[in-house]
Length: 126
Image 1 (cartoon, one colour):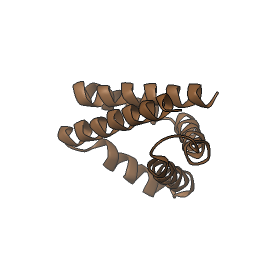
Image 2 (tube, rainbow, N blue to C red):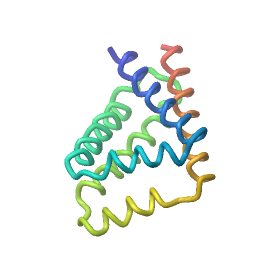
Image 3 (tube, rainbow, N blue to C red):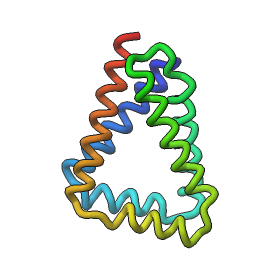
Image 4 (cartoon, helix red, strand yellow):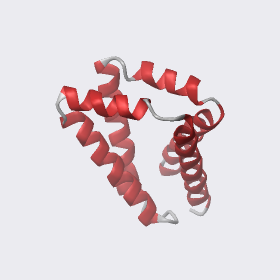
């Protein structure tokens, strides 16, 4: 079950990363539409927090465990900030995230693809 969950997370990270590398304008537009509604944003934050909690708790046998604990803790902190921040500050942070130069989106995509590949390596080594 753990391998299946982390495989799904890796596939999503890989797809998002490739989208950000290949077509950042198109991908950012899709992501902006996803977080434009308060309910969808809330659901996405909650799903992200569950995935990050699984990274913190469930990566006991994977290689690079410290990396996954750090990634999970950073993701949990981001989710807690987005849930607890006042509406104006949350909107300002989301605007800042979505109004970056395209090279930054490509770097973020490369980081996501790298994390997905590393997670796949960890799953294979189970």
